[in-house]
Image (cartoon, rainbow over all chains, first blue to last red; front, side, top):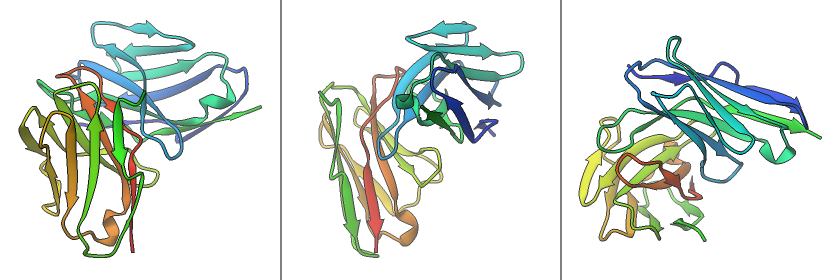
Length: 113
Length: 111
């Protein structure tokens, strides 16, 4: 069945470092991927998305890379800040006509000052 | 301004006592979703409304129901909450296949 998983449950970095959060997906037919950030006690917050016809997409301090050959997705955060500390989820869209998100297990990012 | 509003933010109920959680939106998006998120887990889709059409996930227990009286509001009804239903319940909105936006969630405690 479909599954989206992450390699690392917790990532600890120093403030100012670059962070890389990885995600593997299994449904090769997925055409849309999203990264969400979830802070404690809050709902997931959209960070960035990418469609399967792209390999890379950049936002403000964030970059998403998609490698369809190995079914791998990554989120890169430049100059990580304490405010970036949260759980990050990747998700793939498994729906047709609507967005049915299949979430990965999540990676907790801890940023030390 | 908040796009997705969930009330209450915290709800305490007793085992077996029906409870209703509320979600409203300010964007008039046609799709509204309900997710259950247990501690340290990813959100799990319970069901969604596409306009007025209700779409239940195959593994959503019958204990969970939903109503959408109009475009702006959607309710999650838990008919007989069990201890295992304690979780964060997230509402999200979307427009067709566009990005989903989540509300802040309602944390449900079952005593």
